[in-house]
Image (cartoon, rainbow, N blue to C red; front, side, top):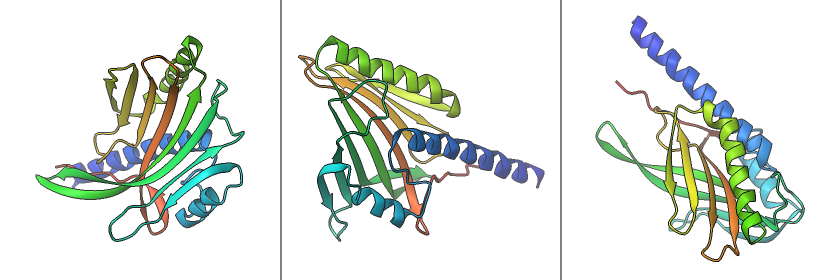
Length: 204
Protein backbone atom coordinates (compact mmCIF):
# COMPACT_ATOMS: atom_id res chain seq x y z
CA UNK A 1 0.00 0.00 0.00
CA UNK A 2 2.81 2.40 0.89
CA UNK A 3 4.58 1.63 -2.40
CA UNK A 4 1.39 2.37 -4.32
CA UNK A 5 0.90 5.65 -2.49
CA UNK A 6 4.53 6.60 -3.06
CA UNK A 7 4.19 5.80 -6.78
CA UNK A 8 1.06 7.92 -7.09
CA UNK A 9 2.68 10.77 -5.15
CA UNK A 10 5.84 10.61 -7.29
CA UNK A 11 3.84 10.60 -10.51
CA UNK A 12 1.67 13.47 -9.26
CA UNK A 13 4.77 15.52 -8.41
CA UNK A 14 6.30 14.77 -11.82
CA UNK A 15 3.18 15.71 -13.74
CA UNK A 16 2.77 18.91 -11.70
CA UNK A 17 6.41 19.89 -12.19
CA UNK A 18 6.29 19.23 -15.93
CA UNK A 19 2.92 20.91 -16.34
CA UNK A 20 4.28 23.99 -14.57
CA UNK A 21 7.30 24.03 -16.89
CA UNK A 22 5.14 23.84 -20.02
CA UNK A 23 2.78 26.48 -18.59
CA UNK A 24 5.79 28.77 -18.05
CA UNK A 25 6.95 28.25 -21.64
CA UNK A 26 3.47 28.95 -23.03
CA UNK A 27 2.97 31.98 -20.80
CA UNK A 28 6.37 33.52 -21.50
CA UNK A 29 6.53 33.07 -25.28
CA UNK A 30 3.06 32.57 -26.73
CA UNK A 31 0.80 35.61 -26.88
CA UNK A 32 -2.21 33.45 -25.98
CA UNK A 33 -1.67 30.55 -23.58
CA UNK A 34 -3.96 27.48 -23.70
CA UNK A 35 -3.47 26.84 -19.97
CA UNK A 36 -4.86 30.07 -18.52
CA UNK A 37 -8.54 29.67 -19.41
CA UNK A 38 -11.05 27.18 -20.77
CA UNK A 39 -9.92 25.77 -24.10
CA UNK A 40 -12.91 27.18 -26.00
CA UNK A 41 -12.08 30.68 -24.68
CA UNK A 42 -8.42 30.26 -25.62
CA UNK A 43 -9.40 29.11 -29.11
CA UNK A 44 -11.75 32.03 -29.63
CA UNK A 45 -9.11 34.50 -28.45
CA UNK A 46 -6.48 33.01 -30.76
CA UNK A 47 -8.68 32.84 -33.85
CA UNK A 48 -10.05 36.37 -33.40
CA UNK A 49 -6.73 38.02 -32.47
CA UNK A 50 -6.63 41.29 -34.51
CA UNK A 51 -2.82 41.29 -34.49
CA UNK A 52 -2.80 38.15 -36.66
CA UNK A 53 -2.94 38.30 -40.45
CA UNK A 54 -2.79 35.71 -43.23
CA UNK A 55 -5.03 33.44 -41.17
CA UNK A 56 -5.77 29.96 -42.40
CA UNK A 57 -8.30 27.79 -40.54
CA UNK A 58 -9.34 24.23 -41.28
CA UNK A 59 -12.14 23.03 -39.06
CA UNK A 60 -12.33 19.48 -37.73
CA UNK A 61 -14.47 17.10 -39.77
CA UNK A 62 -14.93 13.34 -40.00
CA UNK A 63 -11.90 13.15 -42.31
CA UNK A 64 -9.69 16.07 -41.24
CA UNK A 65 -8.27 17.37 -37.97
CA UNK A 66 -8.31 20.98 -36.79
CA UNK A 67 -5.59 23.31 -38.12
CA UNK A 68 -4.96 27.03 -37.69
CA UNK A 69 -2.08 29.32 -38.64
CA UNK A 70 -1.51 33.06 -38.72
CA UNK A 71 1.21 35.69 -38.85
CA UNK A 72 1.86 38.33 -36.19
CA UNK A 73 2.51 41.87 -37.28
CA UNK A 74 4.33 43.25 -34.24
CA UNK A 75 4.33 40.57 -31.52
CA UNK A 76 7.86 39.39 -30.71
CA UNK A 77 8.83 37.38 -27.60
CA UNK A 78 12.37 36.66 -28.85
CA UNK A 79 15.57 38.56 -28.08
CA UNK A 80 16.28 38.94 -31.83
CA UNK A 81 14.07 40.92 -34.18
CA UNK A 82 12.34 38.48 -36.54
CA UNK A 83 11.33 39.45 -40.04
CA UNK A 84 8.23 37.29 -39.55
CA UNK A 85 6.57 35.45 -36.65
CA UNK A 86 4.04 32.68 -37.27
CA UNK A 87 1.80 30.73 -34.92
CA UNK A 88 0.30 27.31 -35.62
CA UNK A 89 -2.23 25.25 -33.66
CA UNK A 90 -2.90 21.80 -35.07
CA UNK A 91 -4.48 18.56 -33.97
CA UNK A 92 -2.27 15.52 -34.51
CA UNK A 93 -2.84 11.81 -34.14
CA UNK A 94 0.00 9.95 -32.46
CA UNK A 95 0.36 6.26 -31.74
CA UNK A 96 1.53 5.56 -28.18
CA UNK A 97 2.58 2.11 -27.01
CA UNK A 98 1.16 1.37 -23.55
CA UNK A 99 1.22 -2.07 -21.92
CA UNK A 100 2.11 -3.69 -25.27
CA UNK A 101 -0.93 -2.05 -26.86
CA UNK A 102 -0.86 0.65 -29.52
CA UNK A 103 -3.18 3.48 -28.50
CA UNK A 104 -4.07 6.35 -30.82
CA UNK A 105 -3.94 9.68 -29.02
CA UNK A 106 -5.17 12.98 -30.40
CA UNK A 107 -2.96 15.82 -29.23
CA UNK A 108 -2.62 19.52 -29.98
CA UNK A 109 0.67 20.99 -31.21
CA UNK A 110 1.00 24.70 -30.52
CA UNK A 111 3.96 26.24 -32.31
CA UNK A 112 5.57 29.66 -32.50
CA UNK A 113 8.06 30.24 -35.33
CA UNK A 114 10.41 33.20 -35.62
CA UNK A 115 12.15 33.94 -38.92
CA UNK A 116 15.52 35.63 -38.38
CA UNK A 117 17.22 37.76 -41.06
CA UNK A 118 19.22 35.90 -43.73
CA UNK A 119 22.96 35.31 -43.43
CA UNK A 120 25.37 34.47 -40.64
CA UNK A 121 23.83 36.94 -38.18
CA UNK A 122 20.46 35.25 -38.60
CA UNK A 123 21.98 31.83 -37.92
CA UNK A 124 23.63 33.18 -34.78
CA UNK A 125 20.32 34.71 -33.70
CA UNK A 126 18.38 31.42 -33.84
CA UNK A 127 21.24 29.44 -32.27
CA UNK A 128 21.53 31.88 -29.37
CA UNK A 129 17.76 31.84 -28.82
CA UNK A 130 17.86 28.03 -28.77
CA UNK A 131 20.70 27.98 -26.22
CA UNK A 132 19.05 30.62 -24.05
CA UNK A 133 15.71 28.80 -23.74
CA UNK A 134 17.40 25.40 -23.42
CA UNK A 135 19.42 26.61 -20.41
CA UNK A 136 16.31 28.13 -18.85
CA UNK A 137 14.01 25.11 -19.09
CA UNK A 138 16.20 22.00 -19.51
CA UNK A 139 16.32 21.36 -15.75
CA UNK A 140 12.52 21.19 -15.59
CA UNK A 141 12.40 17.95 -17.61
CA UNK A 142 13.77 14.51 -16.81
CA UNK A 143 15.34 13.89 -20.22
CA UNK A 144 15.58 15.04 -23.82
CA UNK A 145 16.41 13.68 -27.25
CA UNK A 146 18.26 15.67 -29.92
CA UNK A 147 18.47 15.18 -33.65
CA UNK A 148 20.52 17.20 -36.14
CA UNK A 149 19.09 18.35 -39.46
CA UNK A 150 21.12 17.54 -42.57
CA UNK A 151 20.94 21.04 -44.06
CA UNK A 152 21.75 22.68 -40.73
CA UNK A 153 19.78 22.80 -37.53
CA UNK A 154 18.85 21.00 -34.35
CA UNK A 155 15.63 19.61 -32.87
CA UNK A 156 15.44 18.88 -29.14
CA UNK A 157 12.44 17.09 -27.60
CA UNK A 158 11.99 17.32 -23.82
CA UNK A 159 9.97 14.88 -21.74
CA UNK A 160 9.22 13.03 -18.54
CA UNK A 161 9.37 9.24 -18.60
CA UNK A 162 5.72 9.00 -17.53
CA UNK A 163 4.50 11.08 -20.48
CA UNK A 164 3.06 9.45 -23.62
CA UNK A 165 4.47 12.23 -25.85
CA UNK A 166 7.02 15.06 -25.83
CA UNK A 167 5.33 18.09 -24.19
CA UNK A 168 7.99 20.58 -25.30
CA UNK A 169 10.30 20.94 -28.32
CA UNK A 170 12.89 23.50 -29.37
CA UNK A 171 14.33 23.73 -32.87
CA UNK A 172 16.43 25.94 -35.07
CA UNK A 173 17.09 25.45 -38.78
CA UNK A 174 18.74 27.09 -41.78
CA UNK A 175 18.50 26.29 -45.47
CA UNK A 176 21.49 25.68 -47.75
CA UNK A 177 22.18 29.30 -48.70
CA UNK A 178 21.13 30.62 -45.25
CA UNK A 179 18.42 32.85 -46.70
CA UNK A 180 15.89 31.39 -44.25
CA UNK A 181 16.86 30.99 -40.59
CA UNK A 182 14.08 29.91 -38.25
CA UNK A 183 13.57 29.22 -34.58
CA UNK A 184 10.56 27.27 -33.29
CA UNK A 185 8.98 26.54 -29.91
CA UNK A 186 6.38 23.78 -29.71
CA UNK A 187 4.23 22.72 -26.76
CA UNK A 188 1.90 19.70 -26.88
CA UNK A 189 -1.15 18.92 -24.81
CA UNK A 190 -4.49 17.17 -24.77
CA UNK A 191 -7.91 18.61 -24.04
CA UNK A 192 -10.51 17.16 -21.65
CA UNK A 193 -13.57 18.81 -20.10
CA UNK A 194 -12.69 21.97 -22.04
CA UNK A 195 -9.24 22.35 -20.39
CA UNK A 196 -5.73 21.80 -21.75
CA UNK A 197 -3.73 19.29 -19.74
CA UNK A 198 -0.70 16.99 -19.87
CA UNK A 199 -1.44 13.26 -19.45
CA UNK A 200 0.89 10.69 -17.93
CA UNK A 201 1.14 6.91 -17.78
CA UNK A 202 1.58 5.01 -14.51
CA UNK A 203 3.88 2.10 -15.19
CA UNK A 204 4.07 -1.09 -13.10
